Length: 112
Image (cartoon, rainbow, N blue to C red; front, side, top):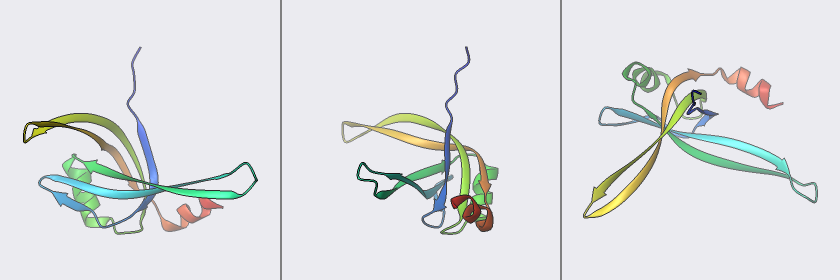
């Protein structure tokens, strides 16, 4: 059986894309809402940082994405580690495989 490492992010950018060496990083806010046990509506925002390794997609993001833009990204989760000063540090990265810049109108319509 084939397995899939697929992580979908749909949200709004929290800042302009930033370049770190040859890599582009983008902060994205995702919102969720629910009703708690007394029936009150609750909301929470989760923040994730997307990592763009694909040069073509990264160049598109840098040229076209602005703070507050609605986006859709298909990603994979990659874990790694590195040593600094003799201490091993572990990382989890969200690597973008496919990316779409959504229209603000479509994003607002789907919120209803």
